[in-house]
Image (cartoon, rainbow, N blue to C red; front, side, top):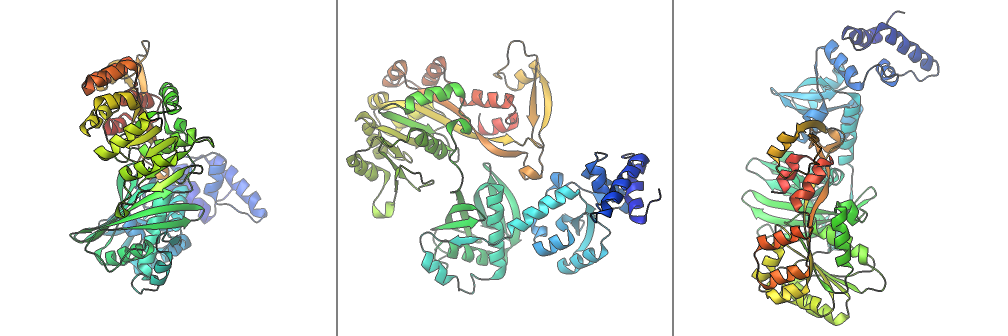
Amino acid sequence: MAFNTEIGFLGEQLIKMGIVTEKQIKEALEIQSQKGKNGQKPKLGQVLINIGCCCEEDIARAMAEKSGFDFMSINNTGVDMTYANLITPEIANKYKLLPIGVKDNKLLLAMNNPNDIIAIDDIEIMTGYEVEPVVVPDKELNTILEQYTNMSKNIDAQSEEAEEEAAATMDDELANEKPAVLLVNQILNHAVRAGASDIHIEPQEKHTRVRLRIDGVLHEVMQQPLKLHPLITSRIKVMGGMDIAERRIPQDGRITLKIEDITVDIRVASLPSAYGEKLTLRLLNRSSKMITLEELGFPEVQLKRYNEVMHLPYGFILITGPTGSGKSTTLYATLAEINTPSKNIITLEDPIERRMAGLNQIQMNSKAGMTFASGLRSILRSDPDIIMVGEIRDHETAKIAVESALTGHLVFSTLHTNDAPGAVTRLGEMGVEAFLTASSLAGVVAQRLMRVICPSCRKSYTLSREEILQIAPDFPLNPDEDHVTLYKAVGCLSCNNTGYRGRVGVYEFLRVTEKMQKLILNNASTNDIRGMAIHEGMTTLRMDGLQKVKKGLSSLEELLRVVV
């Protein structure tokens, strides 16, 4: 069977590279011919993939080899959005290509067909760059094109606080600058789809930098010319109901976004800096389902002990950890667990991060004199069974919370400490007497968030018993285990080239027993309290993290990043 020109180009190269045999090519050609009779003639490469002779990467490598261009995997290199933004999504989809970076002053153009001269000429005219085509696998290119297109879709946005004012201001010429509108839409879309918790838009000396906090780590996603920064800030401030003329003092605003079926609440904070206003946007997904304590990653044994404490009729329960460690999520999951029609639950929050049915949620307003301390005094007159205070920040709040627990209420709150035993010392530093802490405190949860390793690209490696114990002397090995299999993060398109996707909680739970009460009354040190807690069955943060690393949930490097 003779090859036509097109078939010969790919088929001969695949045979030459030893990827397929001539027999397989002939089989694929017959299938192609049969389907062609039905008016659905597929590409030879796709037929070869369908019958299992090769993969998409093999096809792309053969195309690159034959055409003399470089092969590249977007999974490994990623995409520089600064250069991707040089063309519109419409052009990218029309020609099935995307600029992914620059090398030696040449624009690297990811393509399926590097011989498309018309497309290359058009891109060179549009961008002003000399183009160097690179061949990438079909699936990778289609995935990145879909992401790029979705990022640029329009979004429905409105301010919660100043809807009417914002709608009127939208006619402002500055705010309606098309580049700014499209760029802001793109940033917001990208952030939501990447699962970012925060967006940082920062003016630098020569450009504006956009960073996203994904799974607790900041990633730079694009750089834009500094001249666009006033347009971007004005657009976001209009959306957030903020004063666009005021650039000298910090401001706060709120935006509600609807991207397809996802509703997102955004807190906007502006801050004057050396080169202009820095904007920080905190994203709260209103559409996300409530996560249970089991799903958060609470160890089974510790969860059983925590369940006993959270169902007590009264007492003081603290959730501790640094900023961004998931304390609020654990609190909401706890309240969802104990929320019944027979309980009057009142919460004091700043801000209300998630609206929950059956709860009486109160927003703090310091300008109006509504602080945690004053709010706590007020709600005690509203016959609560369970009280949730967003954060213990001062002596007054701590004292009232402790006294509320002693007068028959179950009180939940958060505190910034490094571990669970440290919470006892911290309350003492806030001026709460030891006898009050010992009488009221029922339990303390300490937590961190550890990134989950991406299952699509993780790479396994094996360490002997001696090697792992040298790295981590406390690694949980069974007596008969002489080796352990762990995983390293690699990075691919599905995890935004980070090697991680999602997060899991690492926990320790301190139950205040009679022995622990005696230690607290005697003003024992944090180390003494920790020693007693471990003796009574507490799993430390590090030990829980090591258990999760052993199960393959994360890497050893990630654990050492979040837990000492």
